[in-house]
Image (tube, rainbow, N blue to C red):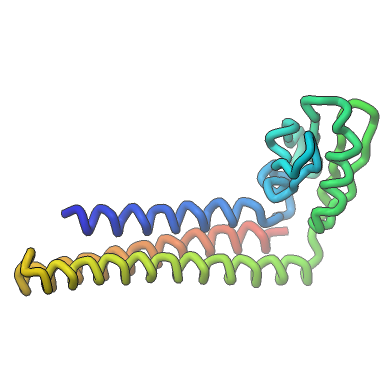
Amino acid sequence: MPVIDETRDRMENALAAVRREFATVRTGKAVPAILDSVRVSAYGGQMPLHQVATVSAPDPSLLVVQPFDPSLLSEVEKAILTANLGLNPSNDGSIIRVPVPPLSEERRRQYVRVLHRMAEEGRISVRHARQAGNDEVKNRLKAHETGEDEAHRLMAEIQKLTEEFGGRIDTALAEKEKEVMAI
């Protein structure tokens, strides 16, 4: 059924968006994704860091950022410093080293609250997808394109999808929360 497929696609997109957002939340170890939100002033505009530099994690407590264009070194360093991530980059003339300090208990709890807010936004997106699917089914019912029994079956299937994707968001949240709280 196209309605079910469209609804599933919307819910898949919501889940993927939540996972992308979760990747930007800092854990106790260095992961290049924590710099995904950094925007660098380069070439007359604001560009994402990954478009102007490579980011690698040679060990669990260090990120190494190497700009493609050496003239952007100071701009990249400034962007990381002002990104409000609690990181202090150091520039050695060719690369930028970003030590990732261990998180305090209070900071971990703050990140968990942020994760819960992101998960709730994902659940809201899933519910919006459910609403759009149900509206489509109701419109088809009004236009006599589908029968009442079929409409109820489709709406029940959409509800099952909603519960499934809500559970998948909760599972992703639990995994990330465990990762953030691990010492």
